[in-house]
Length: 230
Image (cartoon, rainbow, N blue to C red; front, side, top):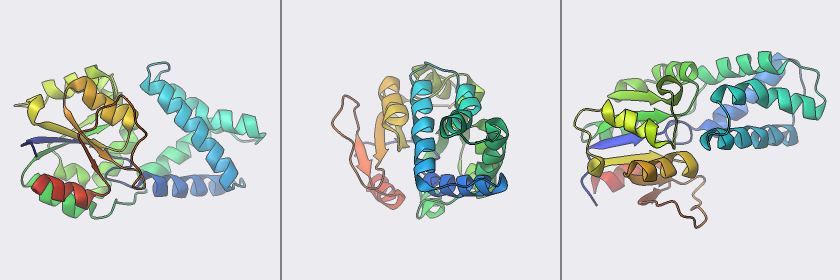
């Protein structure tokens, strides 16, 4: 195991359980708008949403297009008479004030901060992420928070990580590790930045073979702590 000094941590799907949060926020917002929902409808939303996020990561669309079109497109496709923009606003409000920690999240962060300098790196909506990080107490564990919306570049772009490097004192890429659950933003971004990567497996499943280089894989935050304390 190499000696690291700086850990770059993703938020959703890594420190916080975004799947649970998303399910709750969707159910709440559909109820708020007096709309019926079911699993096929929510699954179609996820397909539309993921497609837009992938396009954003590839630099094909601006970030605001995701939020201005995902529910609009869903409702148009499914013939639902609702205001997709208003729905999005309520959904974001709910996301900011709802969270589920990944198992052992705060205990692991408390352990890691004694040995490492911790930083958040996220592509999430800035206002939503800052509210959520403050309410969860995660922000108090960090030396810094880097949000793509505030920086003007995003994971996996090298420019995003160059910005982080320029704003972290004593940054040496040989001593930096990024931890996240996304191959196409966290792991690929780490490759572009020339830093080691730790893939947080989604549901314990390893990724399909690809050209993205992964240094370590873990199934839980507790396993991450044990790896870094070895």
